[in-house]
Length: 474
Ligand code: 5AD
Ligand code: SF4
Image (tube, rainbow, N blue to C red; front, side):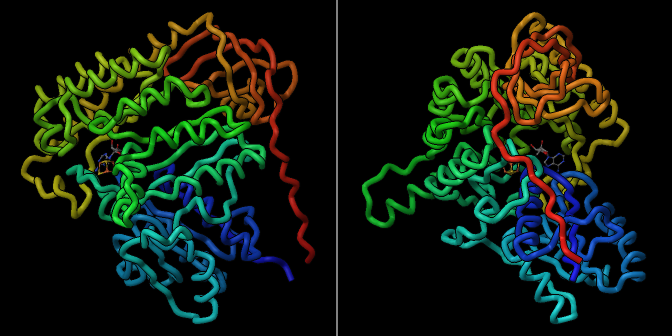
């Protein structure tokens, strides 16, 4: 019999992409194989996101297309997971009765089982858990089998949920409270990844600074005499010291709790990349207060200055929202000033999008008109690109270590690599270089979103095994 096939479509952030790798891993562990296209997939999983974009429209648009496919192939199973599933639950099946399985953010680990159960039951299954049990390590996406997108770099979830309450953000509602994954579990996973040939890991969490606070609190409650404190800096050190790891990245810290010991770990652990992603969100203190961010622009810039002073040649990136309810022209001018002063290497910029159920979404009277948002967005883009280009130009002549990603997407005669600063560099190579190898490149040109360079030499070959596609007997 031919193995059944699956396809996972991901919307949203790295957290979701990582969940999708786990969903794919679980389905493969269950005997399914990746489908070449959605047209011949037996199981289609839509892993939804509701953090910013108009997720509902996207989901129902996709479900509309799948409905036609399912009419032709009634055996096909349609599965909806992720943040929007967590939020809308039964509503999805009510609106789209052809959906077979709905699961939330706390039961990703049940994905394959639910697909199997639905096949037997023959009716739609909706399974949403309100929360992850703190001792339920199974539910950490990283503790599940994965089908990683690339074999040489990996994401590792260190924490799920978020205990903050930023007025614009849906994450606490859909991902629940903060729970840290066990310290040794994480280090063990990194060791296993390295044994598999991975040399770069990105530690994922909504608020990595507070990683481990809940773990130390639990130990204290159990009678141990430990100090209740976050363990993120210790984790950076432990992961950075795993034999064979060359690059450690993480995202994201919250500026209000960026701790000196994290900066020290970044400055002293050689594997930890010289790149800090520090979400600003807004430059006006009034808007920051309305967002409940817990810092002022001045405090933010002070922390940034301290990080720059401690970590030589630090790249800094950020997230900024324009058009938060009530944002005036003056408020926005402050955002431009702070962005210019921070001199970012790049920024993810967003137009505020009301997320139903969040505090800011209720401030309808103060919504900023769409055309004002578009204009502000454009002006911010110009400011960010100016600093990005200046910082990139300053690198011309420097030698950078890059990790090879493969042929350039725009021009296949060029090779693309990524620097420790997380910047793309395009350069010519006399022969194809294997993804995952390391090379030294001299920077020769700069643009706002990439660098160009000349290959000096390959410094380390890729160590991971190439996956050989397994032929399936029919
Ligand atoms: N509207 C616009 N941007 C948002 N973000 C989160 N919620 C919203 C929203 N409602 C942005 C923030 C956050 C990033 C992941 O997404 O900048 O840091
Ligand atoms: Fe959302 Fe704020 Fe938590 Fe980030 S820190 S996930 S923006 S609530």
